[in-house]
Length: 195
Image (tube, rainbow, N blue to C red; front, side):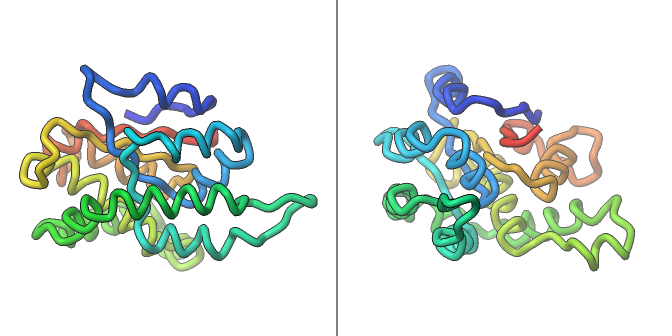
């Protein structure tokens, strides 16, 4: 179930029954959190217990946006980019295991299909779901459905996003009434960085 996200401190309350989540990071969420709480975001990224995954496409978007300046300030500070790169390197083996799972492409296809369910053709052409978004959703769904096979028993994904392209498909697929629902999808938590 999606939860409105307002304060970085809520992340610290997330371990459920003593199990740390695996954070799946979206470009927009990183930019939003950088804007709202630079020090808190860096502290979160630097925590040794934090397991977070940013798909290569997200990391590439962050690197492209890193030097963008709005109102005399960078969208992403160099130190935040460095913390993010260290975090991604630290969790590379988990991300690789997820991306190489035999069901990964199926979950990615479901992400695209579900994102387009209620869109008219005009909207799909004007604002299609990006590769970064479909890979981010696929990581969350693969982890949710196959945590035991990935040697991450009990771990659950928490997607940090500002993007409707991520929020809506995950919310739909985690609904038991959806045609493509998988029981494992229910454990996906979506924290939105924008109301």
